[in-house]
Length: 115
Image (cartoon, rainbow, N blue to C red; front, side, top):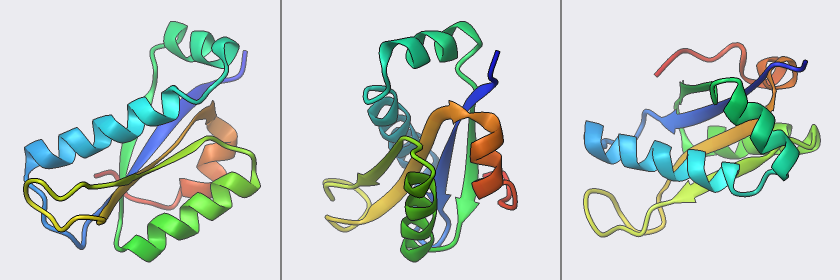
């Protein structure tokens, strides 16, 4: 069986409270999960829904990793904040990659540090 996981990349160059960060990560995880096919979703949920948050330094990093993931046909979900609370409207806060094959995701994000 293929090992599956999801990575959520979180920007460190914008200041978000822990609660705001948690909400943005949740938005990314759910949005990405809603786009996968039923078989992949079932396999991922039955194997623990592995999720890991990693640090990136900028909006440009989010775009870079999104492009790399999409080139490998991996699911992505880029989150843009509405600006109702802590940060400016339109701010890109995080990016989910997967759920997808752990080996493929690690080739793209394996060099990043845990958030």
